[in-house]
Image 1 (spheres, one colour):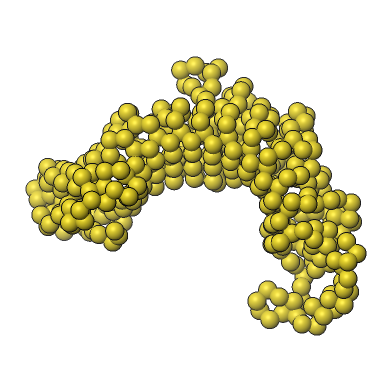
Image 2: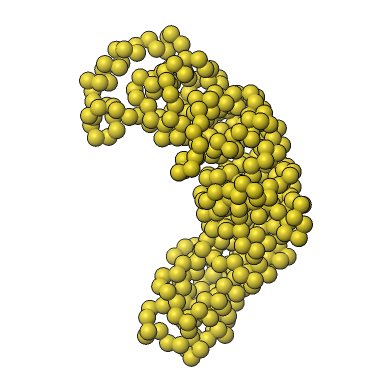
Length: 391
């Protein structure tokens, strides 16, 4: 069921009648709502006169009731809020009414909740007060009190957290109990933690969790500054982490080295490893070749290895000294610029790879599709004939 629109503040027929015509849909588990708030200018009538809050409540209530009757087993609600034009003061109350009625759209006991561009208010946090969320996804997370409380309230049941557009300080707040500064908010069932685009820098003197708040974590992804600089978080995930995707900087890497967290074979169950060097204006210089060695030490049982922004020196000589893991099937090196000699050296050193994504530079004039000119291809084909046999 898609592309059904309802103008909540009008007297037009409600979607409830369409939903009820569907009879019973017990297999439906997830529902996505797109709430579009718009103002078409000064011609918009005052909502107090023609589009009252009572009318909006009536329409939303009828639709939500029909959803619960027709789809009694849905437990996941995805809510997108989009502001098309700036709201006039007279329309702000209408917008607040719609957000306040989300409880009827979410259901009584949601287990998975996704909010995109929805401002978290007191009314919204009260909606999930009795819920036991297993999964939560937030398109923005800045560590404000209400949004942090929404996540922490479900800490004992959450199995998946997905956050986008956040900061290191906000992610630290996620595991800190504000009432007990020295105690950690633990997520005992959390298996997957994804934080995309962690903008901004860490507070070097700020609070850090003294114990690992994610004791069962299997998937850890953090793009941007990794917020938990004390090695305890990664160290205590070594035995069970299967998917690791983080960006490193000199300060964080030095702390990991000192605690020997990145020792050879430390992450025995790791099947996916993605390490990249955090590029920012204040980054300290670091020997990227050393990081390359550490990556191979970590991925002894890894099927997929991704290395971003490495800027390796003397690559041909480098790969001649290393041994790629025999279980490695996918090699991904985006933004690590290679010439053809270097790319071939890597492929020859890793013949077990079934798929490779390499970034080529200085490949000469080609067909316009990212391929070298035919003559250059022939030159390298002749040069490297028998490469596989020598390896």
